[in-house]
Amino acid sequence: MKILNSLSTENICLLLLVIVTSFIFISIVTAQAQTADSDTSKNFEFESQLEELLTTLYCPCGCVRETNKACVCGTAQAIEASFRDALAEGQTVEEIRTLYLKTYGSEFSAVMKAEGVNLFAYIMPVVILIAIGGVIYLVRHQSRSNDISSTQPDQQISDELQQQVESELEKYKEQN
Image (tube, rainbow, N blue to C red; front, side):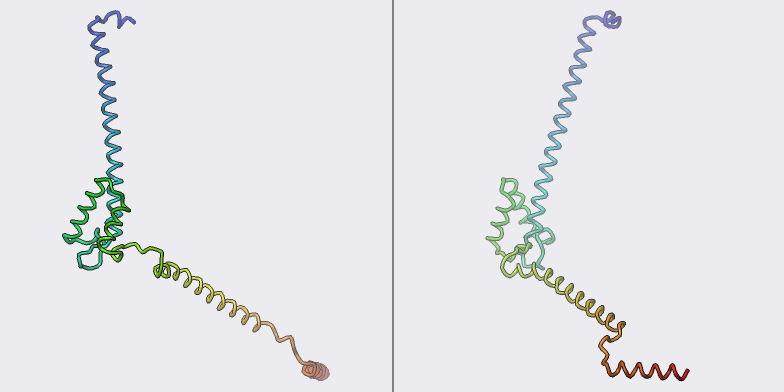
């Protein structure tokens, strides 16, 4: 309180002005940082959409069959620029992909749709794994049954053979 009494009115006004100015400065900096963060997230979304387009569509240049991202020809660069422009105009990834495939043909899609003959390619690995598992099961089951049968004597001995063994055993006992 003594400090405030010793300060003049001009000094108090100057102190208040510095405090208010610093609050305004902090709020401006915070707003700019939030704007930069939202610009960064928008830029990241834009780049991820562009990446999706470039990696899921083949380049129609006639070079080795590569995606637009992997191809280094001028055609791929022009297509990337057109994708950028279309995304900047607000078109969705699906709209751009549909137009591209309509222009160049469905064989330029790098993603195989699960329909028709392609469905066979999706199902076959599962079928093959199940078949291999079945073969392994049968082989193991067969080897176990062979092991069990080889360790156990045959229980079905004829009566004649049993009598013969018993008589041989009695002869052996009498001799010893």
